[in-house]
Length: 381
Ligand SMILES: [Zn+2]
Ligand SMILES: [Zn+2]
Image (cartoon, rainbow, N blue to C red):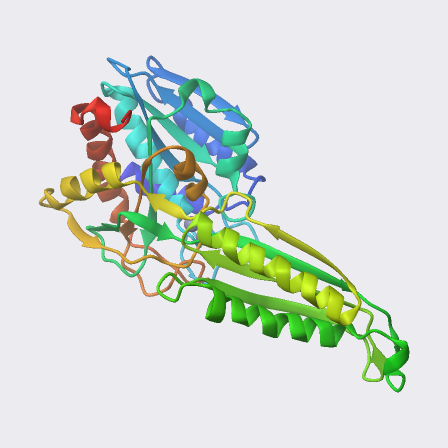
């Protein structure tokens, strides 16, 4: 068996939730420490690992990012190498991402490129925007990449297929939490209380008009309230309610517009219903993933010319990815890697085709080496 498929299976058995990837980090470090060390410098921060591969020329640095966290899902694949961590699963393919990154790293450890390459094993993609945490902690400062690349597995594409697009590939996401403070009372005395179910219902309905009336219809946005908690009994007017949801937009500007409209509507509800409302909107590091023009058009041209690669243009998705935070700072590209399987990402039965691992390693290595022959000026316009 291909050693990196074996590595993927071993990682698949030990999924951990974001910022708790202790076993995963130890496993990865053990593999990295076994590589030729001559060109490597290794640094850790919490559960992150950064490996700098010194290039033979070393004028610029190219970043490759993999995420390493799993999800709080109970695996139902029935695979012999299924998760042994109860209630946790690598259901987003980050186990394959890690195996591919290790595979590519092992090749550059043997034979460095002209450029330096920074391999970034990133924690907490799913929950705490680990990419932002590591970047903001200054851990990349001495090795700051001139361009950054990453992939994500895609069940709907067969193995051998790579897809992406110039511009926004994933939406930015923003978590909204709203707390209403009114006055409880007897159901028969509404005039002596201040009903927060009515206020919350109004706010929910008014928020629907943001997308339908304030957002340019050809750009689009999503506002979904997935949770409303209010009340205790049929005959009690509730003085409190909690509402939470998500905002998804394709550009930072659209995010700002939706946030501003939310604040205005909340202020209006406070006045109309004489209540106090706490509003928090947090985007953490889940910025839109915006693929830069220069790097992405070069990537597409390169992949289209590879005989073993079936390149496809892939539409924007309203899902989120914290790689958007790094691409907000550094130009680069995120792309989909086909793993043809019947179940979607985050499904408890997802079982990606492992043939994508050796294929992915080859393509990542080729693309990172290709950076050596790309003109410097595209990174420093
Ligand atoms: Zn995911
Ligand atoms: Zn993922």
